[in-house]
Amino acid sequence: MNSQHNPLLVDADSVLRAAADRGLSLPGLIWDDTCSSTNDELARLVRDGGAGAEQPAEFTIRGTDFQNSGHGRLGRTWTVPARRSLTWSILLTPPAGFSQWGWIPLIAGEAVRAAVAEAGVPAVIKWPNDVLTEDGKKLCGILARIESGAGGVRVVLGMGLNTRLEPADLPRADASSLAIETGLDGSEIDHEALLVSILSTLIPCYRELTDYGDEDFRDSPTAQRVREHMVTLGTKVRVVRPDGSELIGIATGLDHGADLIIDDRVSVSAGDVHHLRPVSVSTDPDRGESR
Image 1 (cartoon, rainbow, N blue to C red):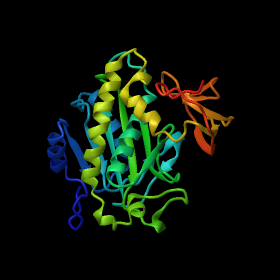
Image 2: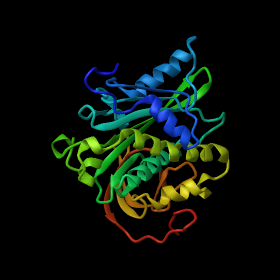
Image 3: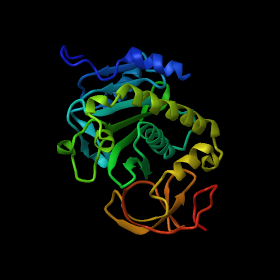
Image 4: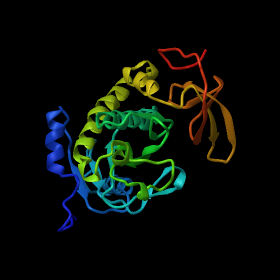
């Protein structure tokens, strides 16, 4: 529920109108001042739909001004001070037989990157699910999870963008926020405008992904944009896999499913990626892979 003294940073009706002005039709937007996890809450709506409740429509959004029990990758927790990040999740319903799961967080990363750039902060994508400043400080984390509902397999896609954090609020030294990067007072960072800007890239790019079907999505305009703005490619990296094993090499491309290709020979689908140093790599402009 909304606080009596603090109006919500995102007004649902205002966002729906602004989205419609950009040609986007959203079925609904739920926003409040506090929730445990927007991903958990949206996933619960999907599960409840399988138990007799109405199934939420594609592009339903669940957001909050303060997420107090958020999730990071690989089971980590994630939280920031209240009213200082744009924290929300959106429901995607890929068609039957869809298999290009790895592209979804990368498309979301490109959507956030474009919105951040529109707000005056040049940014880059880090594989598989982060958006960084050009000097490598984290601005946004993205987390996608698969849920099975009455309508089939669905994706709950969540993201948290550091917007109004001050230096003392930063959870770690290699993080930043739009307020810090632009020098603006946090109150000048418009959450509604950022949200609509992200959606204006995310939804068309996602539709392009689903329209490709079994074709190689690497040939698409969206995939080309992702590769163009992905700082990981052409960089020497250390990948720590979920089982604790490590792989060091040059990130030379993305495969058909958006897994990261190391040294032109190994594809990595999950893991923590640490950038070690940039390396000059010859790439195919159509695929972003070394030869």
